[in-house]
Amino acid sequence: MDAFSDLIRGVRAHGSLFGASTLSPPWALHFVDGAPLTLCTVLSGAGWIVPEHRPPEPLRARETIVVRGPATFTFVDEVGTRAEPIACGEHCATPEQGGTRHRRGWNDPGEDDCGGDAGGAGDAGDAGDAQDAGDGRGATTLIVGAYPVRGEISRRLLDALPVVLRVESGGAADAVLDHLAAEVSVDTPGQQVVLDRLLDWMLVCTLREWFDRPGGEPPAWWAAQRDPVVGDALRLLHAEPAAPWTVAALADHTGVSRSTLAKRFADLVGEPPLTYLTRWRMTLAADLLVERQAATVADIARTVGYSDPFGFSAAFKRVRGINPSEFRRTATTLTGLRN
Image (cartoon, rainbow, N blue to C red):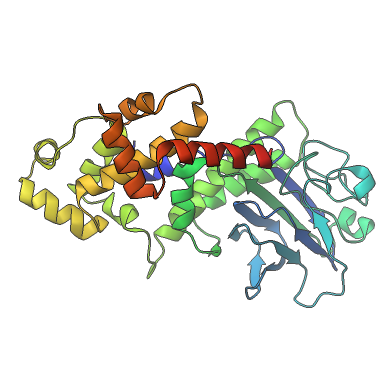
């Protein structure tokens, strides 16, 4: 398991988190949910993404923009559009609110509705003239995937991203767009599952390209994964975080001296190997404390590599600023309020 795979594993499209619409100008779709991550791409046409408190970003055909919440944003045909904003979110997908009649998320040509997946966050809409959308003149086809981000593991990925990132056409994501275009043009059994997985694939391709862009500043762990020594060490730490790792053991597995590994790891990742391991264990533990309510603190400690629950609690408080039991109570309360 590599670091990126670990961090993105909790970021998944699921059912209602997909929306697509064919729009004719003028339009203004205000995405009000403030999802942790929202991916926007257009199969044809163009528009503008206007993030809250941020400058507008053009979105042209086959380009992709990812917006990091909790700020909201608007998709418009042009900056300063005369269209009245349509609030798109959990209510946008019901017909009485202007929403789609179809759970699959694709509006029928000629129908004046706000296309999106029924009951979901990240729904998109048809804010323009239905006949224009039906005959395709000046129409823009928008695809939106809104991603919940559950747990502390995936939040480490969010911390590495700006509020808005864009990836131009011509990269690996183009192949995914071709599949998306084919899938949304039909209504077939199992379509939602296919769309979810395509959106996940699209997000992975988009983030890879953004991290690898010329002149970019990817997080240290991203670049370090490609180092033949440090990359191997990171994969070991992520594959077996509970193992009794020492710098010497990691050095043996990566085929270098202890001093070489320690220096190279610190230079590329920005901290010593065992410091990185401790922080990663505490991130895993934070999620386990919430997910496994029946487990004791001692159980969680053993799961992440600590035989002594007191040593684990001290490490958790040192890294997270709160002891495990207090963290569990607070996180469980917040989860209950959100639900």
